[in-house]
Image (cartoon, rainbow, N blue to C red; front, side, top):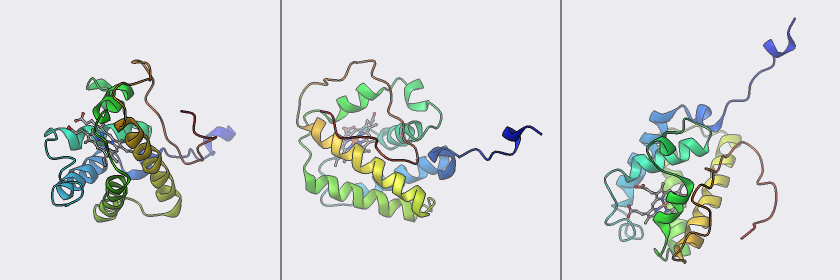
Length: 161
Ligand code: HEM
């Protein structure tokens, strides 16, 4: 018997989350809530109508889903570029994290310890990078920098500026 036939394949975070419609539901509700939030509303006041979907597609691609964000013309460089010069504060970042995690519960994303640990790890990492990038005016990453990917495990080492 082929042993591979019986070896269970670990699902990606994208698959475990239940696919694109769940990422879109998550960010659609999140950005609705952002506009009712006194801390975050001023940050996102002029955001584009497509913003929520772009963030859903970005996170889904990072979680090893389809490359929709890239196929729509986005890139890691592009995402960083959107944060330049926004001068985001730690208070805004914390509120962003709190609200996006509350919204994960509201839309019924899986709440098992392993999945949520990976999600929190990614959101902490990504949101702290967003704040760092918001304090500068140029992207130091190459324009063709690959999209990051995120799995079930650990970061693998210390921060490299
Ligand atoms: C994992 C964390 C994050 C991810 C993956 C992410 C992703 C993105 C993406 C993909 C865009 C571009 C959207 C578009 O093309 O329309 C964007 C824009 C933006 N993000 Fe983030 N972001 C993160 C964290 C944050 C945080 C913590 C804040 C603020 C507290 C923030 C504030 C903004 C703002 C102000 C824009 C520009 C909105 C606009 O004017 O259209 N981001 N983000």
